[in-house]
Length: 386
Image 1 (cartoon, helix red, strand yellow):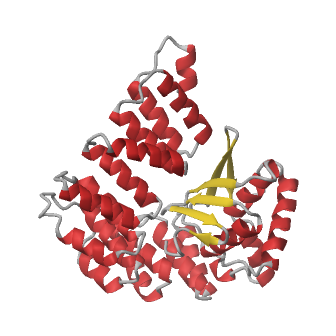
Image 2 (cartoon, one colour; image 1 turned 180 degrees about the vertical axis):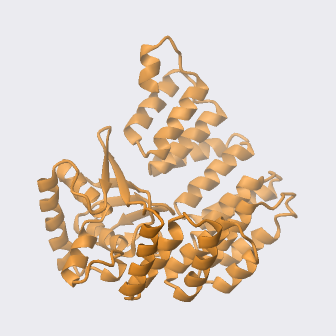
Image 3 (spheres, rainbow, N blue to C red; image 1 turned 90 degrees about the vertical axis):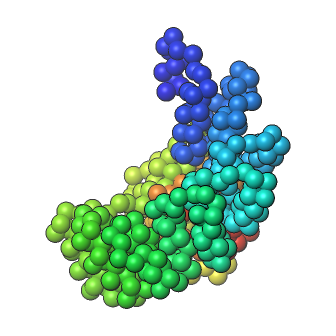
């Protein structure tokens, strides 16, 4: 779009920059986003509250904590609207900063800032990813007191709060006899997190009746069977997918380097510098194995892989690990890597990346389907709660 504007007699305005900046944030494209912000500042458009909020979202999603804090402080000093408050809360939520989000929410209410429906969804999400169950229950129970009409999204996030914490009875009670697929999908995701076969099997029957072509219940149940070592059951579920023409969404990871975006697909060898990346991956694996890392083959999801060697090789070729190796090929002495994944990062990758961050002396940030993971010196910001 920006390139189009440069060759056409069109002058970008505030709305244009908003759309482009949010696009760079969603695609985790820091180089292009910073160029846009420079133009915005040169044109003195950065005093707009909407632009400031978009800049906050951009810096938050591209993990520039210093700039995020600077803009956040600036916004809070100028009597912000609920739109800006929601952007700040969302920034805390995506990085698992539940306590900061809760403190800001309490401050808003105390200072008579009226929350809206989006505010409740965001704060509940922040609390869910921080394991703050009691605090989430309290806010959920006071929605109507805050003069907000309860919405399906509020209930969905609350189901996530319970499911993520392993409180399956509470989640099922909240869902009741609802036929809303999103509620049951959310609960089933919790079953995968805790590998609860009994409830997952029950939800599978419900979801395949509500949305028979949705791949998620098939994949989640199959993966749980694999984790438990029941390859036969896992193969049966995958067979049902094939019979009904349901396709699995592949794991895809994106990374940016010097303005170029790279894509990596789990198990694929179709990426730049294949030989160099393979050599780097082996080098990195030797280091982390020497430091104590052991591949957890329970997280292999391909029922066709039988031997331990095949399973370990499969885990080695998850997109996150290939993307990290590629990043080091491009810049051997780099100190930070930023990745975006379309799926929830698996436990084996999570463990391996923690080891890599320490042994390679690098900060690695992974934005998966659930949240941001900041790996540094062998630890993750999520404290293994995601």
